[in-house]
Image 1 (cartoon, rainbow, N blue to C red):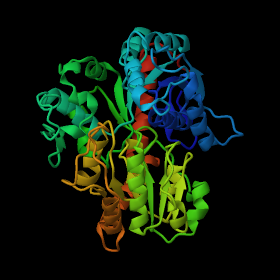
Image 2 (cartoon, helix red, strand yellow; image 1 turned 120 degrees about the horizontal axis):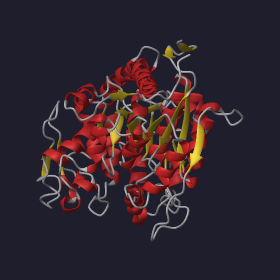
Image 3 (cartoon, rainbow, N blue to C red; image 1 turned 45 degrees about the vertical axis):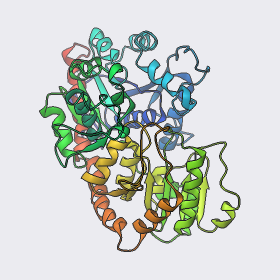
Amino acid sequence: MALTIAGTGFSTCTSKKLRVLLIPFFATSHIEPFTDLAIRLAAAAAVEATVAVTPANVSIVRSVLERHYGKHHTAPVKITTYPFPAVDGLPGGVENLGKAAPADSWRIDATAVSDALMRPAQEALVREQSPDALVTDLHFVWNVRVAEELGVPCVRFSVIGAFSSLAMRHLELLAPDVAGGDPDPDVVAVVPRFPGPPVRMPRAELPEFLRRKAEVGCSTRNPFYAAQADCFGLAVNTFSDLEQHYCEMQMRQGYVKRAYFLGPVSPRPSPAAAGGGGGWLDSKPDRSVVYVCFGSLAPVSDAQLRELALGLEASGRPFLWVVRAEEWAPPEGWEERVRDRGLMVTTWAPQTAILGHQAVGAFVTHCGWNSVLETVAAGVPVLTWPLVFEQFITERLVTEVLGIGERLWPHGAGVRSTSCAEHELVPAEAVARVVMAFMAPGGPGDAARGRVRDLAAKAHAAMVEGGSSHRDLRRLVDDLVEARSAAGGIKSV
């Protein structure tokens, strides 16, 4: 007997809900899209979704659920917890990259991939919950084996796009002499066997793990890629029309057994949800405001914040700037000078709603993948200012492949690096000059806006019923239900 969920187009042959357990990495930029995916699963099919986090990260999940369902409604998505291990040098209760001191963030990264420290608690949780399917972050390679022992499918969910994920894979496995070889930061790596225009990366802009050859194994069967090949499938927070060639490569190269492109999983709120910035934005002309935000992870030095403040002032453009630096204060007299056209926000800001406001004309972004998807969905062009991890690689997709923005600091202007010690200060004059040029009528911002608006329409089409991401979500659920049936986990009705 087929059971159809009203209004979704999903059908299953189950007599009970499919119980899916989702386990994200310890960063807000991972926990939020995992929770968004849980919401999609719970809404789209007969799925009981549970997000598993450590105690200090519960508030992040709850915040996402409250934004979606409201504070006074019971969310169909459940939350469960497991303990974060005691780690030498890491204060108790610090369980998120965004809460760790810059000097301690590596401890959270190291703990997350530690079979000795992290696996016992996660494995105990998975065995206790006994889900029908497991959705795990990429860091936790052991979960593939745990799920296999339990006889349930394990799907790895990537919160990073296909372009950047594949570029890092190809650099690590196919160009080991460049990725981690010559210590000269000016050495340029070209991503091998990659579709589209050549992707050239100065070594200084590569993720740290690719710059440490002695610490990275270059075997094609290292644990990370072995787990990816052995798991039930890979889900990615992207959509086919955004990264088509790179999505197709996942299957064509045999990197995974199954691939599901489900994004953007974050919902699109109305501009009315822009919170404290909404009324201020309402007072500004259409497409006039520069929105500036560097995400929740990477710190920006006080000296760089000062240059950015002075540059935004000198640009003459209205701006809304989200600053996550508790100790920093702007230059004396700055707030008074920009009072009529600048708004500095030091608390959490509803980014998707801000980007969706008609007054926003450009986004100065660190190129975190969630931010890229949100600006694409909103149809807002970008000025790029990558800081860490894969963000410099993602910048190439944004500027060179998609053409939806430009670098804020042009080629040859100075050294940029994933290591803050190597990254040169971007001067205020450069900030002002590029912002003014990008926002000028008929300038590069207008051309980028046309391209990103086309992608926005495709992003919306992907998520509605019958769209590519909607179909892939339905296929994922159907495949998991079929796997449960094959394992004898349900009774026909």
